[in-house]
Length: 96
Image (cartoon, rainbow, N blue to C red):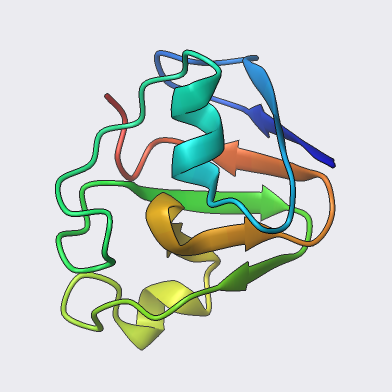
């Protein structure tokens, strides 16, 4: 189980637990943190966040909503992101 801390936005300083098998979006919502989403399939971009620190695995998502230029800067979609360590996440890309 990993700890995810939100570092800005409406949920600044919120912390939630997430195992490596559950997406950031699902874990956050189960624990009362409402990250915006539309499709849960990596196609709409509404749940875009930026990982400030930590390791993660990114599932398949549309390059139209998450182009390579953003991926290299650690932007990712919460619906398709799985932690591999504790994370610090910025909601500035998709704050609710």
